[in-house]
Length: 204
Image 1 (tube, one colour):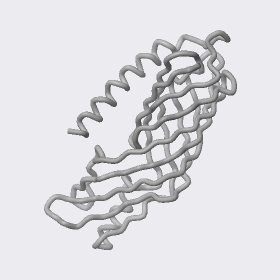
Image 2 (tube, one colour; image 1 turned 60 degrees about the horizontal axis):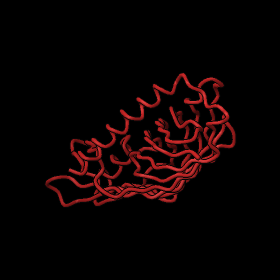
Image 3 (cartoon, rainbow, N blue to C red; image 1 turned 180 degrees about the vertical axis):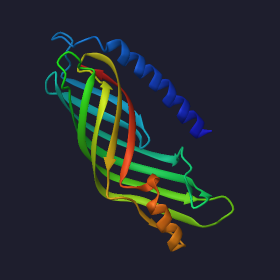
């Protein structure tokens, strides 16, 4: 039930965010609308987060964010013919730079940054008491991506970000070494992790 609710919430926010982005594509922030700061919340596969943004100017912004999650992951990878449920917990802090390269399209951003934190995954399968850990701990994670929305303007702002996280990969261990190796080689627990993030903030 929690997974269904999460997916439904993501869908609603995504539709709202994309609608806002579409409307704002033809707009450009003017001096009276420009916001020096913004604060907001966001949602991604790595949990919810709160963030603070400082718009240095109309083209470049700095963002600091703190996030986390604890619960059942919405994915069930199949590895070597076995489908695994994942109990997941994350905690992280990140710092990011967003740049708007197009003078007449401040709704488009390029982003990069770093994050530090942990991702702990406990894998279990139906009909077995064996569990496996696939953990990202103490990694400094690099991020690159692009975003839509998140304009440096006063008032309510929506954003959608797509990107990749670069990590050193998960450390996997459990009762059977060959199964642990198979899990570590699966793309679900690789060194490159896709990320989609939906956000809403208030500029001031």
